[in-house]
Image: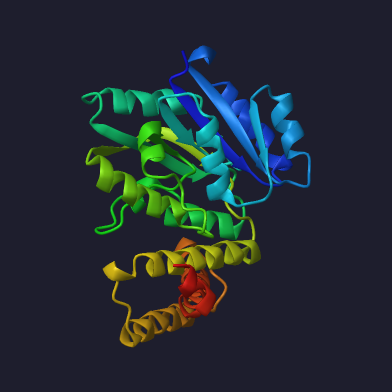
Amino acid sequence: MISTSVVVPAFNAEKTLGDCLRALCGQDLPTSDFEVIVVDDGSSDSTAQVAESSGVKVVRQHNCGAGAARNAGVRAAQGAWVAFTDADCIPARSWLRTLLAAVGERTPGSIAGAAGKTVGFQSRTAAARFCDLAGSLDAGNYLMHPRFPFAPSANLMYRRELVERAGGFDERYTTYEACDLHGRIMRAAGGTFIYAPRALVLHRHREDWRSYWRQQYSYGIGYGQFMLHHRDEFEWTFAKDLRAWGEIGWLGLSAWRPPKDDDGLYKRGLFIKKFAQHLGFTKARLDPKERARW
């Protein structure tokens, strides 16, 4: 009997999806206990063929975004638990078993879900090494947020009925949909969410600053959308905006020289991250069309 469904959204992921699926199909659980569902989000490459050759369940749809792809995977899922990872990730062989063990140690029905630790895979470039220094995508960092804790969807599991009851991922988001869903699930379920750092996933971080910039700019847009969606819980003022730009300016002054060590690399990466995110955030927050959508 299938206990867990693993959903992998994929868009033009032919170069990385094979490694991801080999890792998932090689989990140290009986194959009858879980299923893997790849949602091909309108790829123009051979993503769907790579998935089909791995023998996993494949769902195809027009390009609608990662949130919509995950929702399609949830609709196709049979397991009581639904786990998420991404096509550029490589879960450890014990990943799924460790997540299930973490939720199984508590009273049945009291656990909403669990998330594990995500670390870089072959982080050889400066941009990728910065991501490792900053702990990018590590749920342990995001779950410590005092008001809006959540876990990134690269290494995440929920009870499927809670995802369905919450209405799934909000497909309007460019990014940040995981934070929005987590809040809705936890407010409705009132249960416990567990951080299981031994449930390990390797992630291919962005290899150059240009692609990292685009990623962070997109994250900023998603954060701006999140703030618009939850505007009754936020108070964003002109003074706060000035302070944010001031912080970015100071970071820029300390990051303009080529880094000589990890400290210098961290400062440069943090400047790029915050600059790109705040530009994306400002674009979303001031865009009349975005304001109307939320």
